[in-house]
Image 1: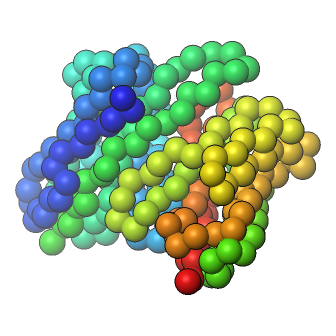
Image 2: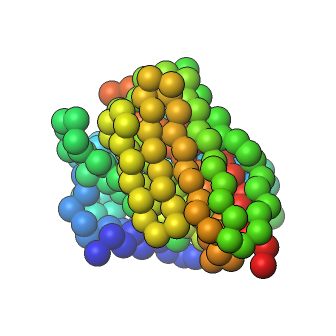
Length: 117
Length: 111
């Protein structure tokens, strides 16, 4: 099973709202990721959690706040977003195996399509 | 800074024809991945290539890697409509598992 589950699938929010995106995996992966994807563009990395600790923050504005409560769950808390933050938000997970032959494939969830009004 | 370029950006081809998508990257990388994305959907892992000369095949798709040229190719044999999608290559950057994606190739297979 290579399933990463994201909720909700769609979210519409105003600029003053607070909402959260959720991501869950049960593959025993110790790395989890948030990506943002605009239409007709490749995904852009936002955050990486390794062993439940934030290891990469790609200079994301503080209105996006990630959280990793345990090894299976990843949240993205949203507050005071701007219309330009409207995008598809993708969660992914992977192993963190070392060595030359470690594949460390990132498996992606179906995404949350976010619209900020 | 690691950069990944794909070409072409858009490819319209007829069913039954063959074509190749190219992926160039700027610095040494440990792993190269190919993903497929259908419109409005998530990314599906197709291949991971780990070493120079690696070749992987699945159905009508074949991926190869030349680490010396920093080039990967995705070859499509006898295209069918079901292959219509956007294809991304991606490489890992540095000591992390950070994925750097190429620009993507939108493939449209016409009957």
